[in-house]
Length: 321
Image (cartoon, rainbow, N blue to C red):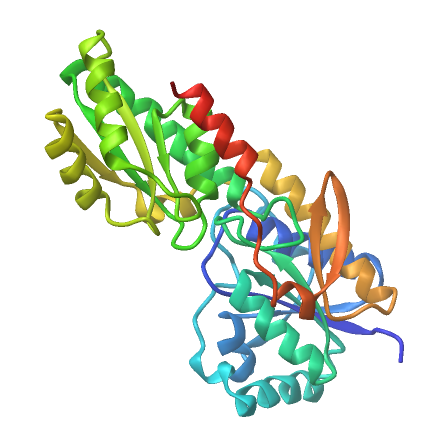
């Protein structure tokens, strides 16, 4: 059966560039002569039949906007086989042949379930955590890192003025990629991530030694999966004798206009997903590896864990001495 119509949804946590991906999916679908629909509020909207037809004007003037015009929501009901079957049936009733899901690990699992139920699906990695395997980068990661780097630049100024150290807590419950990339880019003295062991006593000792040699500030980036920034700061202050202030960046890392890198990545992946569906492919996770677009079986991706870049972490250790 030839493809006649597709839908697109965004699910899970929002990330900058999701709108650019939605725009690419819609315009690429229209270019190929397909009808295209937007599902509001992720899988919840799929169950509620909150689905509307989209055209060129639906995605005008959104490439530069953060968040997602389709909105996103968690959906406990969709975790059940009954919920998944209902979602697939709702798509069939509307005559929708394929679905593009933009989101993270949980969204991919939902897409994989629909694929098993006979819905042609494609996954696009939209998450600031950069924790999706089989892709070097995810949509939103570059923007989130840029936001953290900008914040650290500002903090460094005030920390130097007051001769203090600063613990900056960033997002990453299970992935330390934001902390790692932002830490290297901002010249942080220490980077704490859940993937690697660390020694707070050694960090405090080095901080104390640096201050004795004339250094007047210290920046420590902490991925939230390591622990609360307040707890880390209290321990370092007690061990070093140097006052540690805490900044928790929180959801500010998900907001704001996407960088050009995220806009281009989202545009490439959105168009690529549609092209694969038009070619008859299904059940794939779209990604980018060494600059090349790739499609990997969703069933493989949802069972895998992204390997942490130890070489980049080791670089951070060498450069922070």
